[in-house]
Amino acid sequence: PWFIISLVIFLSCAFLYLRFADYKYESKAKIQIIDNEGDMDIGLPSMALLSKSKVNLENEIGILSSYAIHKKVVNRMNANIFYYSAGRIKTRLEHSSEWLKGAELNFKIDTDVIDFEKKYVFSFKKKSFEIAVYDKEDEFIDVFLFDRFSTLDTTHMLPFEFDATSVSEEFIGLEKSIILRPSDKVTDNYIKLVKITNSGKESEHLILSLQHVNPKIANEYLDTLIEIFNQDGVSDRQL
Image (cartoon, rainbow, N blue to C red; front, side, top):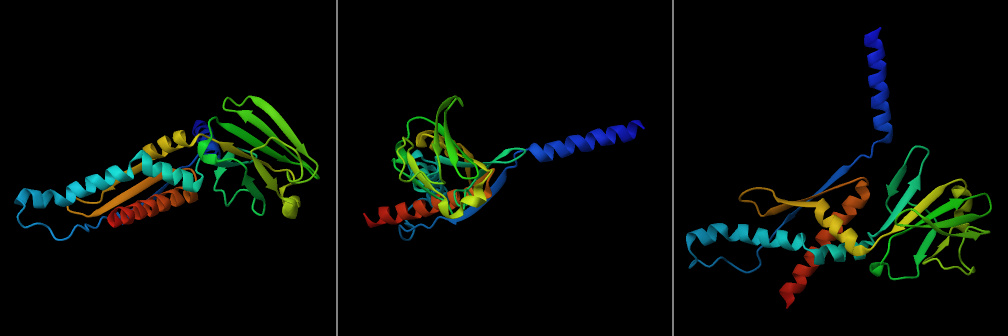
């Protein structure tokens, strides 16, 4: 009987862990660093020739890890805006394309220069909805009530306009939220999260990896980072 009781407790704990745990997915990308400076100078010492690729990779790793390029990625993706969906058990972070499909959310402010973190909670009822505002410490600030599923044609102090009149019935009973954070803090966090390694001792490839609770966000971040890295490289060569 003790074995059965222990097994039940173990399975219950495992079920609760799997139910409530926040899983992290790892996204990876590989890029090749191409030397466009022409053929190697045969007048260079042999040790310099052997270390040329290594030095170049170290320079590129420095660029890919820099604050400047990550700030561009965060700004282009609006990655300092976080979209959440509340479930019966836990709240999950979603990609912007997954959050309230069919609705329109347009910001009236420059989201790149947000100074203070704020959370906006959307609660949808049968014929109306409300948006409650909270600060960084989750302290209530204000609430805005709307008699239809749209903020348009209504005077309010929200930093965005929201419209879901075309798909309003699908949102009844849902609770969604967005959090606006200063982009510099989000940039610093992504610099820590993105890992860059050399794929081999003699390799010209770099491996970029990012662990994130939402794989779609991670994939987009790495894709955008590589895209901006390539664009900046082209611009530098044209100077």
